[in-house]
Length: 541
Image 1 (cartoon, rainbow, N blue to C red):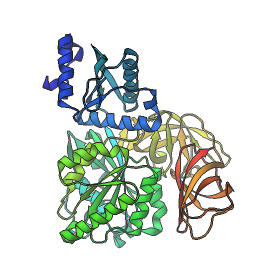
Image 2: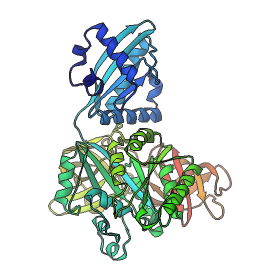
Image 3: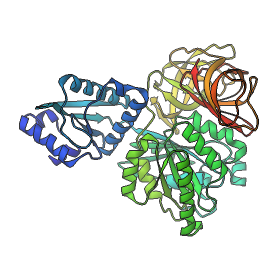
């Protein structure tokens, strides 16, 4: 019975072939309450298939499956607090269908359904399983310059202590001027893997073979998008956080400096993109305990002001709790770390292991081009994050739009992920695609790859919110818009009011100034001009 309740490894139909056994199993499950891979649901309806609620339930199911090592149990007809409610047959069947759709979204399936009649209706047990396909989440780092973003990632992926002078940072900051100045100036990518719940370390993360080895062996991958903390390169940070298919934001705050203006700015970007956030308090070895607690209070106060709940993680029990609660985005864990002593790194690793993927497949392949390469013997290669759907080697896709708004049909010759050759990729994967049928000099950042030919647009309508602006925004205003990997000057053509100032919201018609792009309703973006900033969401194309 205990084996069934946690990790069933035999057919439930055989196990539950007698009514009295069925009832006893349900009663035992209810009596012991919800656990890491067991969820109670009274019922689900088509209402739960609405996008925001659907994604939340998919994230919840994925977490249950991770904790059950590939299997989860849903007990339906039972309230969250464990009361045996019972539901009618129509609602029972509808609940099962909704669970099937949620499972399909995360590449899982309903293995078995057991229904049992009680006085008030039906209760049942639904077993959901997932194949051994790799779990892959993407983390975007953010934070003020010299607060330890690259060092933190370097220590994680190698398991090595830093020397206090940025020794592990060189695994990410590889450009000559980055090494000389000790400052990141471009986006950098790193991979971290788990095998059977244990971290896979790399001796030299710069070695392509080691990165490929981790990608091949891991049953869970964590891709890091390491952004830039220096103010002049804010556009690069925005591109990293908006242009990649990020699941979680990792905001780094140094204990010696505390919260800086860039800290607030980066937190605002992460929250504007609806990303759950983790706070890593770094450099706790450089200050005394009183100063660490002072910074914790400072960070907590900042989070509360923006409607988030800080949660200081002290041990592995806290990690288990917070991993379940982070999906909604309200709970923000704070983990105290030191790269010199590796204090807190065990908690951060455990949290990364437990966090479920938040970006799911969706319908229709879409990828925005972030970087373009000319590779000898291969040809044109583009890289970026798969936004939705999946792509396989040999598929034909449309690339564009070009200046005239047209798209070109090309073939995907090969796919690589962290230098490891794969035959397919899906939403959330950061990949390089070798394309046949288009030249390197024809492409630009912000173009898309899709399986269905899309339509390019020059303008769209959006609801915007102005964060900061020294004067007033009027028709003719020309900021730079950051949308996915698009970074382009735009013009405000029409406004529903005469002007807008800091703190105002309103509807605006926006036009790209130099090139058409593929955009769609619901996409969020940042616009900026100097230190003036705002955000928006496309409402009509």
